[in-house]
Length: 363
Ligand code: SF4
Ligand code: SF4
Image: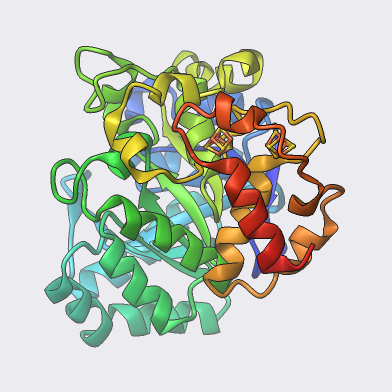
């Protein structure tokens, strides 16, 4: 397992996390959780579809409290034991405290304003008590960090501007990023890329939901991009986006979780660039995807990372210049061999870009 830091915190989250949204109470949630821990997973999204799951995972979660990190949601409530969405302040508050008690957690590491996708709903959450409840939980130490979940980049942008959030959960995958605005997901490609960079600039981490587009991306017949990606490719695409710290994969059994763990056992299959080569929407952008498919550079430049720091710095990330400085090779070391231009499946004019980057940073 690999771990990534939350910029405004001490947490080191596993790059693959486990979402308990699809696990059924009679499918041994505790066994699943134990298996996840054995895999090195330490980050769990507790937006369960069934209320009984909270009590089922209590023995493991409470025993490992100092070693696991939890994401819990203000707005995920239960009727007759099954998930419902609510903005009723009393219901939301009572349900959150009940969930904490059912799990014997004492606190949650990340408390999320749950699933805000529309402006009217955002106003309701901010102005009718739920946001204040989150602030109170943080002040009381019941929540260590505040966050939110959304599928809408415009909502995410507004909440990031408001400040006070350290992590947000966003629906992210190659299909959502490259289809036109509204065709499959909200936000155009440029708007979504700008959001990831805004998050880095503000030191806000992203946890990913829907890394496989609900499984569609894994199946050529269903894939919105017309090509199937493998599980390691989907996960690598998400993990290459700026600000992403963890991909939350849903599983209902240890075997299902092992499918995501193939990211580590089939590392040679992570390169997604060739798979996306035939997707015209990707070409049209002429943007570096940081995929490093063009490696190896004969001058040992890390082309993806150089491009990432450049893009981040231009968007105001004060740390990006220093990160760029710390690289062992810089854009100015490029010898114009043209290898990356020939190798890039997306025809990014990388050689010219290296000149642009060297001029921008001065080395
Ligand atoms: S230049 Fe092309 S192949 Fe190289 S990192 Fe960027 S997108 Fe990937
Ligand atoms: S053109 Fe520059 S960055 Fe690209 S492969 Fe050659 S030396 Fe490396």
